[in-house]
Image (tube, rainbow, N blue to C red; front, side, top):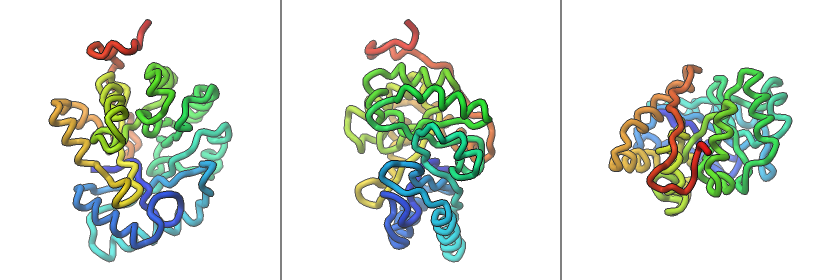
Length: 255
C-alpha cells in the first residue's frame, strides 16, 4: 500500500522533528503494512521555510536507513505545495516538487476557505500538464460549508485527497461526516495519512480503510489504493461520476 501524504522527513516542518521520530514513524508504517511513502513536507507555507536541499538530504538519509535496516518500504519525493500564484512557475523551474516525480501535485489550500484565484491556478497547472490533487479537502472550511466548491475545482481538472484520520474519526465527528459525504458523492480520488507524529497525528491508514469496509464502501477502498499506485506510475486516475448525496439532502451538485 502506498501512502500519498506524509510529513515523515526530519526537521523540515511540523512533522518529524528529528531522525529518532522518523524511525519511529517508519516502524508504525511497517505495522500498517505500508510499502511506499510519498514524503510531502510543506512547501511555500507561510509558517515553514522551503528548503529543497535539506529535503533531498533527508530523503536520501532516510532511504539509506531503510535499506540498511532491511525495511520493506520505499520513499518517494514530493511536497505539499501551498496555493500560490507562483506555483506553476515554481514547478516548471524545479523549485517545487510533484508527487514521486509524476504529473501530480499535492495542493494545499488555506484551511479557512477556497481563495478566488484557486480556479485560475488550477487551470494554469492543467495547461502545463500538471494535475493538482487537493489535500485534505474535507478539512477545508469553505468546502465543509459548501461542498459544491470542491466539485467546481474538480470540474476544472483537479483531483481530491482525503485524510485517513478524517475517515477514522481522529479529527472529530463533523469532519468525519464531511469526509464520508464527499467520498460517497465520488468527489475523492486519493487516500493519504497526512501523518505528522507517533502520538498526536499518527497514520490511521488501516483504521480509515477498515471503517470504509465496515460501512460496505469496498469499492472506494479499491479505487483509493489503485489510484495511489497509479500516481507512482504517472497514470490517469480512476474517476467516478460525481453524485448528489441524496440521504443528507444538505447540498446539491447540480442545480
